[in-house]
Image (cartoon, rainbow, N blue to C red; front, top):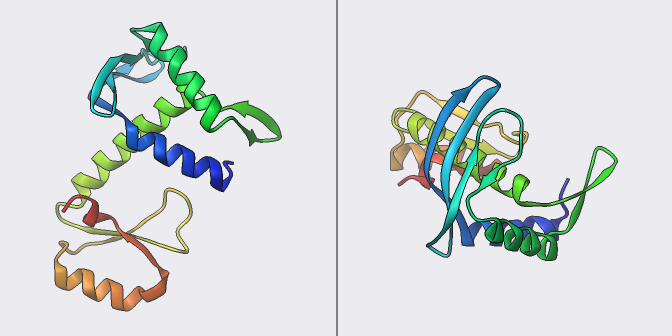
Length: 158
């Protein structure tokens, strides 16, 4: 979907921007959220998804415009199912929100399980062990999976 250069640019942008104060809710058409967008630790504006299939709602249009300009300059267009799409604030915020949700789920599971990603895991997949994470168990995992180990997810939260 994204080129290596685009992935690197997106990763750098995700170091600068973050969503905080996230509150999720169920809507008639799915899930919505209210959040606050930060850049370099400074509050920019509120960003809300009403969960009804429409666009995101930025409390400050100038912030949305500036973010879209930055995303266009640093990431540009990408190929998706044969179409060229612009990487914009809708996609970027959605990715930040999905990463928040995924990390929230991982953090919960990591309390009493050990989660790992190996090279044979597809995007979004992971392996789960019904064993509390310990340094000794992490060493066992490293020895067992050697070069196939990509990440011990629990270590994100240590």
